[in-house]
Image 1: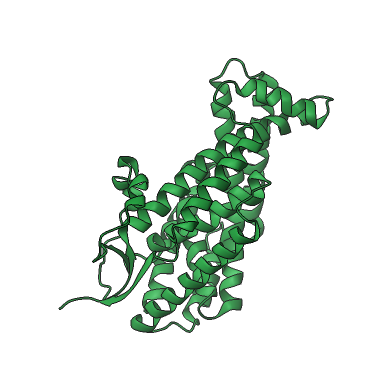
Image 2: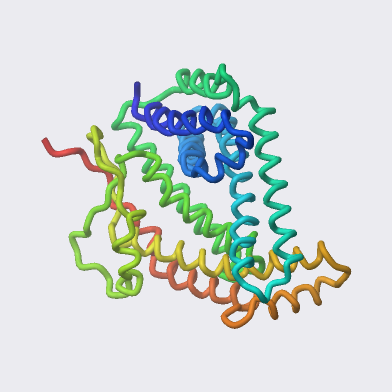
Length: 332
């Protein structure tokens, strides 16, 4: 089995094990959400996304759509459930808002159960998993050396698309979901692929002194995070190398944009709940949401402005263009 196929098989097996266990539950969707099924789905979606840019585009786009549908739905459950739990702990938040979010979470769980049934993910015959394995067995997998070179080229293309996205907006974001969240999502894939690729991407230290401006990104939380440790090299003999400090800088930006995104979405989800549970205008609903959010809550314009400035600084430093340092072979 070639490396590309074995990566899929690793995470497909993990997800299959969760599906088998969930099928024995009264509420499979809820069980999958509570047992971190989103992680192997993220990995599978990432692999399909990556390989659709390398070979067999049509095949991998179809696989990506299957994984993404499940992952997105679990993400929607998490969105409403996380805010519902946060608001439950705040006595200033009216119960009607929390109840609305809990209802939305239950609705998304039901949607997940329907997808699991309709797309035949559940069942003794493992229809969907078997079909995916059959498709993967017929893909045009490359030898390890060519595979690594293709992954490098894919990264260059992905980075260029990210830079095009931000340059088109001239670092001025106008929407939390469509701009801040989308830009962060594009960046985040750059850090998800190494985990999905299981060891063929490793971090290296630059032979030259790192620019002083990188020091602001090297916080203890970033440099000691287990998420910034690459998977063990395993049996790989060719590697794509990243500059360690540039990768840490990328992780810092993803984390900070995540904090800003959550700050903005907290108000957005409150506004949604207010609009759906009372007769009011959007402007009044937003004003009420700001008041309920309390101290520390940024306005949407403040969130957008802060995100834009942060991204402008990061991109002007050419951190993405300097992320990849090359391909290397294992030393005998």
